[in-house]
Image 1: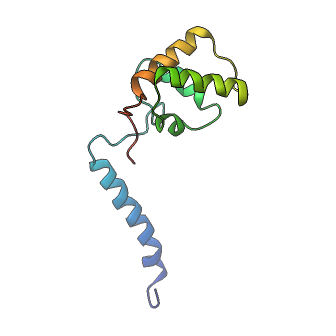
Image 2 (image 1 turned 60 degrees about the horizontal axis):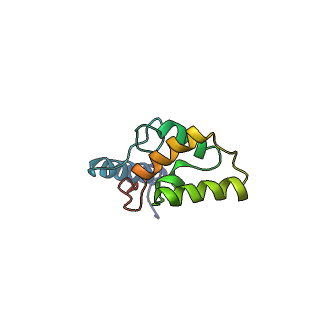
Image 3 (image 1 turned 135 degrees about the vertical axis):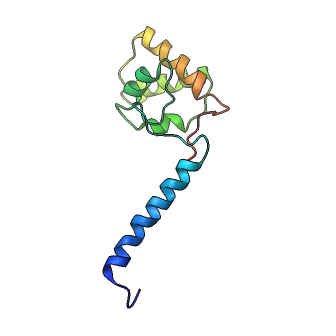
Length: 113
């Protein structure tokens, strides 16, 4: 803005960011970054986080809404078509249980940010 000092102009983005962060913090159920990013902390979160974030962010997972069968099909596709390493069957079951419980078609844990 003409006539506005450089320091006031530079401070505006920081104030806007702070206001947005405070508003988000006030929203009930707003997702927080945790040890496993946006993923819900529950049994299977660690295995899911490390298996999935080897190739993409956990937000890709959190945005999905699939049945257990849909998740299984997606893991098959990633292994067969995208070069994902095949999971140990026990680890695959843990991951599928986790995904079906927390990222099913009703998407109860979809990050709302």
